[in-house]
Image 1 (spheres, rainbow, N blue to C red):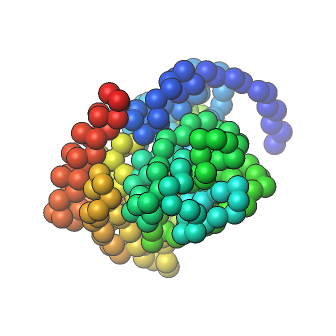
Image 2: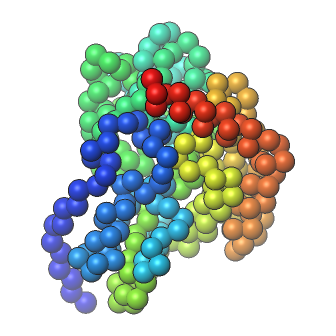
Image 3: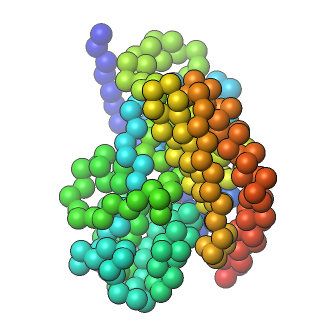
Length: 283
């Protein structure tokens, strides 16, 4: 079967928004206009970073394919080769993620964490500028782009990833069976099941983009383990849940983990974060 392609440029709302990403109270800021082009048959499908895609899509669209997931780890990039453990006190660390900001502060309370915007190449360049001494971002991004940069991989024990981190989502029209059939050739079943568990958890606690809940599901044979961590606004408090269940029932596993988080008081942590974000927006 032969396919042709052409470039198609779409202006997204995030291009004109100067706020740090974690202060914008919505998902879909990157994908909305692109998915609209899919729905209107201007393009056949759209490829997104899965963690940016809302759980509820337009009724005419479907999450047609999740290819094999990349590593979920975050990485620390410093122009002088310093690691997060060795970088000097008072250093300024840039990140676009509220979750990462909290986890950096927990690990190194003697550094300053500031928001950083731009694509991956832009953020890496800023790490060598006057305003930042280092940055933290997802390893999957630099792997996919083939960026040649030295980094230190951060453990998921200290840096619990965002739900869906490292995964790609391919969205197509729900009635476009030809395209869906083509995309299914690169589907990875374990990756989809793991993502479904993480997103079920995220939906249950309503973490969205503003509340830094980290979640990572891993399949092992017929079972799946979902590990979840949530933090207080100052990083001094944390909640940890690890649940194992049938990997073919991922949504139930995610909901079960969410219920345990709620029993442990995750809603109190979420409330504090929302208040803090409002303060940052007003500053």
